[in-house]
Image (cartoon, rainbow, N blue to C red; front, side):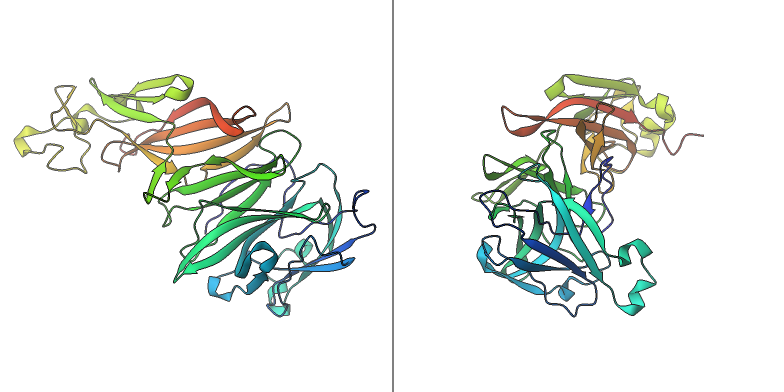
Length: 374
């Protein structure tokens, strides 16, 4: 899977598991060693946070170069309720508490593989964090798998589990990222994956721990399991207007922007239906000829197509100058024929403590020059 671009002007750590000195109610001097294994010779080991053994070793698979998901090892996570699970993603952060500690991490690379990586990845390192966030695939039936987010808090001997809307299919792996999008000083968990195939859009869910619960604060889709339906959240609507105009709106923030297609490179003759050639929109849905004498022609679908979250830049976390984070969602805008790309729509999201969710606070549309323009 192509990497989803997330702009984080803070340090993030992938492929690690956290440990910290226990608080007054915990055991003292609990040590954690983390081994990230690329060779496939190590058994994956995920300790139970409630296990009172002092010295524990965590072994995680190296996922960055995985070509076949069948190579993933089955892991016994009985303490989470999963006997036959596969670890498909992980990250570390200060998810339940701002208290942190240094964590010793070691990589186990095969001899042939060492030449393919950065030398910094081949060395031992110390990182900061206190919780491990796992992305776990659990087989339901046949080739179907449910995806769970599992947060292991080794500092306080707690675990948090939540099923996510993101699915596990295709040859690629879903992605997990850690970032403080709520600006409360604690890290939140961002999960993304393709909707079904490459270049068809992206699904995203964001979770956080609050009041000792792992809650979802944003979903790009709402799933009704009883009715077996999926409703994609859409913050923007768009339509054609007479005189070759298009208008984009985001009602949640009372945003509206209109522009003439002529101003972004289209030519009037390419937008006008040629009756001599009997070329009306309903007869050729791929055509951009949707107007007649500058007015929208009959039988033309006036609704612009707003894509799902973009595969590459659909979810971005941006650090502002005041050091607070804002989440930016990006959608592609097409003419009603779903072929002619005309711009990008951006929804800026901030956390609302009253609803315990990410809410749209502002919008921006960037119209693109037509490829047909000289």
